[in-house]
Image 1 (tube, rainbow, N blue to C red):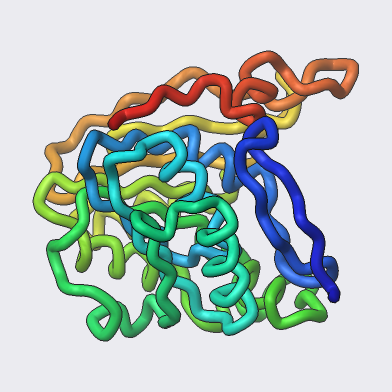
Image 2: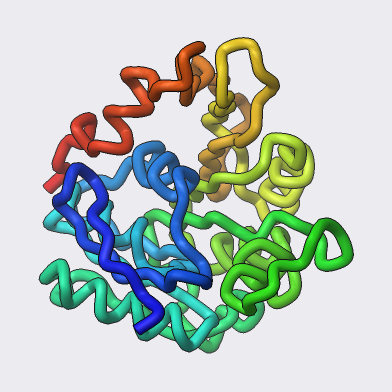
Length: 246
């Protein structure tokens, strides 16, 4: 079988992944760490992939419920297997659907938190990935940034929170899309590979219907000068920073 079985969050979560297709990266772990979930909250992951973010959050927040929305057949099937493999099927559901048709997937104003790691390359830019899984996950061929933000706005309750990870070079596109959908940016954190390097990612949280005013958090540095994980990055990867909310 063209799959691997990998352990994440210090071995507490097991994830089946395609060898040649889409595989989760540090982006997903950073997003899960950045996202706060209150006890009993309902959470939707737009573009759930293999299910890694709902799995991490479900482990951290045992009294909350999660819906993962994923378009691609193979990843939907693997995400559902991963849910069963990690024994969280009573709290995590994976459904197949396109965020562009979110009204066919879930009721409006029905979630407290939405998360997303949207495709980040324009459909006409960059090298197109050979496999469909990676192509659709990385390029805006089946859903653009604005589609993901609009879907979050549709699903979120008033004052619900949207958490997203995106390339830093497209930060303005992200923040503009959030404001256009009445999701006000409230927390922003830039991620740098090295302390002297330019930012590569932005983590952002917005509140639906929130007032203006944003906290710019201290930057997150991933590697030390000798190319080892910083203490904070290592803690995120191991999941040792996580505090159970329920």
